[in-house]
Image (tube, rainbow, N blue to C red; front, top):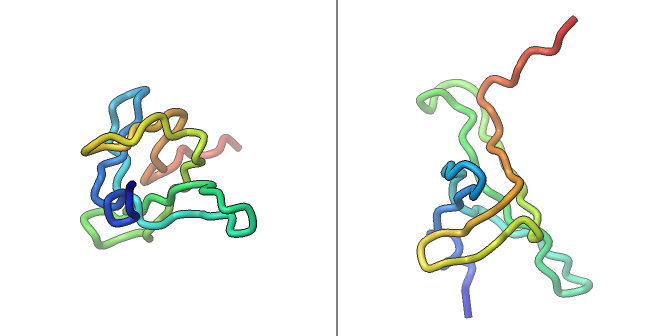
Length: 89
């Protein structure tokens, strides 16, 4: 059995590029059906903790490949960029 506190200490890693995404901060649950829908990862959109805002990345349960002893491996997930590309005019 895995508890929420067990999941919160595991590093979440993208299998496509090996990028560290962060740690789980919350779960999205369908209480009517008793299903886990997604995990929520808190990401920092701040530069050295000063500018910007905290953001959350929602990873659907279907994107989780495996939950290991130390990490959670996910697919098809990209970390939000600090400065998104500008839109062409």
